[in-house]
Picture 1: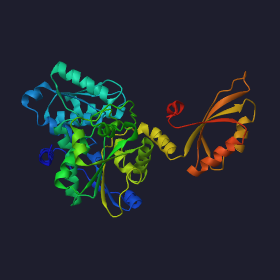
Picture 2: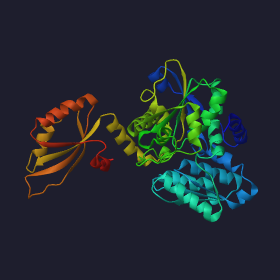
Picture 3: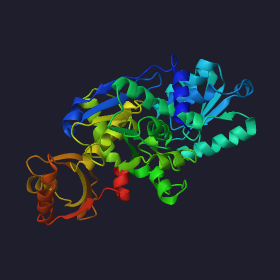
Picture 4: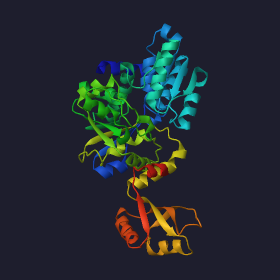
Length: 412
């Protein structure tokens, strides 16, 4: 991989993939003291940068390869890029998705591909779809279009950097990109290392799916034992063989961000900036001021990689954000099965700004007490210690449900 290949891809994509905006973020600039810009890859025709790599690869296939058709595994966005490219180039394609792919992304792939593309749901995580894709390619002869692990895909993704430097008029001091399998990081790193080596490049992984960090630590791609799939666009179990050495040799930094922090940033993007970002799309900007510190006055660009978010997920997004911010807590409380027990809890334990947001209780007449699941939202994180002290002094049997426990996972 070279910078020349990235620039060739940029010329190939000209007139096919529209240039996406580069917007200054007043919110993030004020929070960091830097000049923070968002590269709005959610504004492509498929609402993510993935169309860049998909089109760049398929456009280079021979007539014989095109006749065999293409197949790909996707967490959603790559599939949309492949679908759009297949329709544009008149190629038959099949897109294999894990069951965790939101319905909104499945429907968009079908709509973008039209009669050219078939959508197939298989497996529980992205890597299951990858395995099924290899099997299908071996059986049918279809050409695999990798989401990240191919130099042609990587070169296409790297065009994001070419574009933003032209728009900014100079190379940024810091470029922050989300990381799943590493295609975007590898592509931008390849081009920047040769053309603008002074730019600090930072890749951001979800804490529950940090496969690139694991690969760098091991010196080779290694599968994660557990993968948190909430950030579905970056929930990759194993980093790529092609992308790993490119990332390793680039000197790029890697940081991780908790999924709850991603949710908080998604809400800020929506409520303050009017931007609908999917979880992976909010990864880069979620790191600012948290896992990543930048210097006042620096030019910082965060790649907002996608906006394919299902509106039905916002309830979970809000819940995860409140828990991460220390504002939402859950308890199992043994209440006496007699009139006035709940009233005593409300009067004696809750503070003036505490709010019950969940209450589940089933009375059983053959017992003296019964457990109630109570969700409490506090106004400020500092309100939790007084709440816990009042609970301890109430004489009630109270168990706090800790984030990460199996019961807590049931709630989320």
